[in-house]
Image 1 (tube, one colour):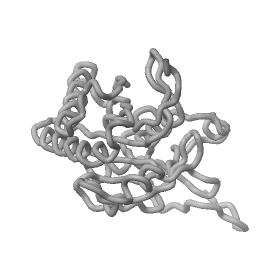
Image 2 (cartoon, rainbow, N blue to C red; image 1 turned 45 degrees about the vertical axis):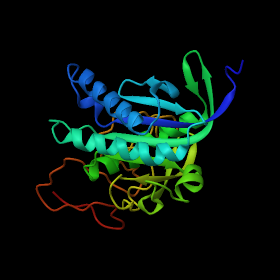
Image 3 (tube, one colour; image 1 turned 180 degrees about the vertical axis):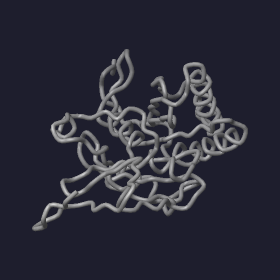
Image 4 (spheres, rainbow, N blue to C red; image 1 turned 30 degrees about the horizontal axis):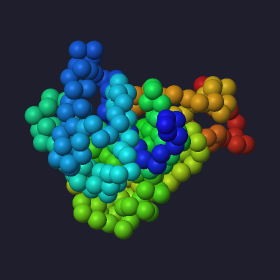
Length: 260
């Protein structure tokens, strides 16, 4: 009777690190590992697999958890079990699996194809943000968690079993829907250092006249975890460049042209 009506649920977006680097033969193994880690954590946290909605996203999973299951259980015990399972498994993996996990609570609409709504968009955006990607790669971590500002204030900040607000750090990031505050954690570690260079969710430098420069959406595909920066008019970006002699980078004003 309530099909299509909004329900307040916890949305969890899970993405695998560097999924584009897996060969076609390796991807099924990677996907199997993702599901095994998630389902083991659900079982250990006492959350039945049939109690949650789960959608396959190719290189990740989209999950919604009904309100009858305490959000704190997912943020605390489930995340702890997820991290422990992943950490132990990665000791024997040739290519360690890295996961970006994001959470937000908001109105979710269900239909025959799955779930949708702004809450879903926000959770997916946080998991895919360049801050989450950069943290996972820079720290060579198994897992990074991102939560929305409202979820941090309402559930994380008060603390609880396996929930330590002091281990989260905030960052302002820009998603398709606008600028938001998110809180990031590397489970099992102190609060991550988020300098000015990693706080914004910045797109790669784009030449003038390209779709991104004109304000259109720019899809960067599967990132490799490196920090990304937007170059302004007075900023030069060089990548994999070798200079054979000293050079001047910048603007020369009021000088004669250099002779050959």
